Length: 378
Image (cartoon, rainbow, N blue to C red; front, side):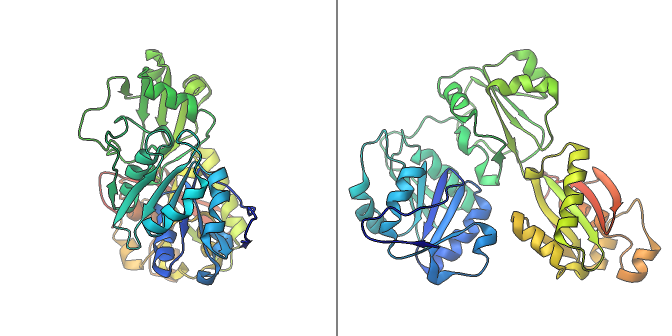
């Protein structure tokens, strides 16, 4: 816990580019859900709203007035998103302001999550772009009051944030951002993930060109690249990463079955080994799905809490509605379903086929599907 004292700048643990701060009961409830929708923010709130899962979710609690926390956030974060009243935020940040070239972006979100307001560092600090991305992520209305909005192009460090996409590495964010802003030739290759990432009511800028494959993008010799994929890049494709960023959409659905009492470490080891064999990124895992008999399985609950993965369970009847390649009378005898991992992965993903059919390893059975973004989750 962070103890705040007058005249002292507290020690904080910065993990992500942005900070999200809440100080009311309703604000905290909303902010906890915002971190699931916008993965680039560290969450801070008052200790009196502690819910017991803060260590697991890497949420930082503080004791004292939030005014004493803000100097530390100003020093370390690119932007600060405050679920605090606008007037209070203006008064608290006033003594911290230096100039528009150094100050972080500051946003305010109302207590009901209806509006996101750009307060400080709209253009240079990126508050305008952050306002649009964060508002899209949480389903709010963006409020930008500067005379001219930011250049309507892709914000590289926030690209796909409203869908939960995360980048593999921040190493090339700055040079690729420069290529985008300077209107250099930037290749975009999307292999999976949500397609409706362009937010503006105008066409994509001419310098941003979409290619159907990485090989075609390589042939075009762009000055920068944005790659949207859930798979690990092959050696010959790494040329695009000389000035490129990989984004990991949430596209991989894990169907899991396990014996009662299987520990989290064993389940995670099977997942890690299987994803490595298929050359898929763990950062793209969207959800873990299984039969409702496993809804209280400690190993699965611990695993999904650790990675903040949705944990979805289905009844035997729901699983039996899904056509199966490998139905099992033995599984039916004990569970009422002809399969667990395969139909669970297929049902959640809405996919027609599996990337990996049922694989058994020790106490764990795993199947993998790629989410069908053309259809909604059942």
